[in-house]
Image 1 (cartoon, protein in one colour):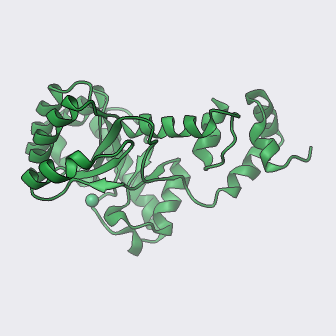
Image 2 (image 1 turned 90 degrees about the vertical axis):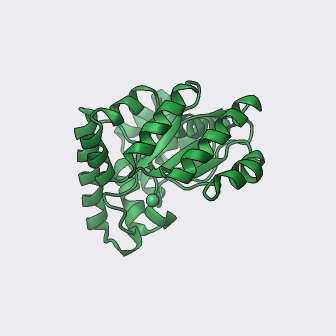
Amino acid sequence: MNLTRRDFLKLTGAGLLAASASGLVAASAQEAKSAPLIYRGSSRHRYVNLSYDDCYLVKRMQDLEKLLDDYPEFKINLFAVGTALLNNESKDPGIWKRFYDKGHEIGYHSWDHTNFGVMSTEAALADYDKWHDALTQVLGFAPTVRFGRPTYGSLSPSFDAVCRKHNLVNTMWSTGWGGNPTDVVKYTVPKARNGDIILLHIRTDDYHTSVGAYPWMRDNGWGAVTLSRLYDDLLMEQNESTGCDVYSGPSLMRTCIE
Ligand SMILES: [Zn+2]
């Protein structure tokens, strides 16, 4: 069988499975030099993703949990560092599981906020394992993790290697809501665009920004969805007319097969 890449991408699920048996899937996966990378979702949907990084402050996580209880339709992502996973769990046992059970997502953000730009690939891979062990410990099971955000937003080869090995989407952002809460709620929040991935942190200012932003979002018809929803919608949009027609990395291949 001698298929072009385009032919390959147009194979049906059954054909793809057959091709997999002949080794073509492996060959194609190697074409993807980097892990999938996302900055923003589809512009078709009036929703955003709110992602909160670091997650050091258990008090502010508890406050956010209470706020979200008033907005059950809003789902968020937490990009937690490994030390915060363990520290917050010791201060409030079950806190991570509660977020998870309410439909929020937890993503990789390093063990202790080291810059991946100064980490070897070996060190980064070990860092992920340590982080994932901590997440498994606090949740009580080993979850599937789909998204990772590099510390300092640094796109380094070591972080890309982690994403490729563990099928993570390398997740950046299209806007940030950091800063003085009054100003952010007044001037920045209303500029939200469809599909924005919004960078926040678990810290006092950003909690108060959330308190101001959530009711505005609800009143103005904005949704807050998980990165999984936002990313899958984007892939579906890229695929929708001709099947698996746009190549954007291993995650797309997986979506096509399913
Ligand atoms: Zn961070």
